[in-house]
Length: 313
Image 1 (cartoon, rainbow, N blue to C red):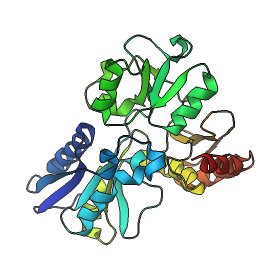
Image 2 (image 1 turned 45 degrees about the vertical axis):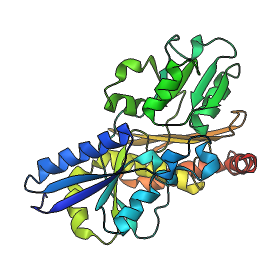
Image 3 (image 1 turned 90 degrees about the vertical axis):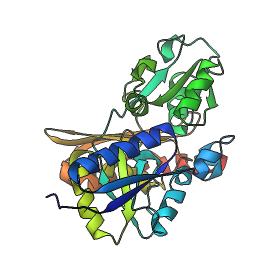
Image 4 (image 1 turned 45 degrees about the horizontal axis):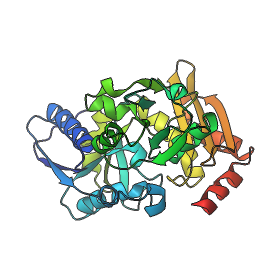
């Protein structure tokens, strides 16, 4: 039930074009819900945006994209932060919570190239760019003849590197390209059966301070229950293995008439060792399904695979 509100809200956001699009989207939704309110955006640069010469897995992980935004909330300079959910650490820091998960966009990976239609068409030795160990592992497993190189920077920076010829192709999240009005850059979609998405990929989340129950109530109409249940199951799998960008881990849940179905995998970065699992259950028991999948992966030696990843990191 929507509650009336006529005060001011400040949204903390990274300053990349995609992050600002997401913040503006949430701002517009809030203005529709509470037309008498004032909603502003506080743009910020995070350490994750500043460190572009090293992979995320080597400099501290995806939490680098959210820390400064959390500080702004803790200091009272912002009321909420909008994130791409796959950038949010699996364990929230004390004093913070996710108040809403918006309806999920396309969760698939996208193949982007100026010269080729798909991974299958790339010649031997072609360079593929990706920022994700998960994508690296999945590509290496299927196409060991390709060369995979790190790709950092915001979406526009990554596309510019492709256009300069530094890569024959790059792999990006389809959701970001669609949100920025760039679906024409997608040459093909990677089916989840071949490139299983990251936990939370395609979903946006709103973070707040845990004690702000009045703010949680204001944001409740933005929560999309099916999306929230699906990503909860995915994040449960990742959390079971200490999920971070140092681990090639994928988890993707969908809600069907019969309930929720989820697939997950962990792998070594070279794609030579992979554990995968699939299960279904009631959508209302999303975390239990995530725990079940995690145990199925452990039965396939997932812990040893992850230990090997951490040793090589």
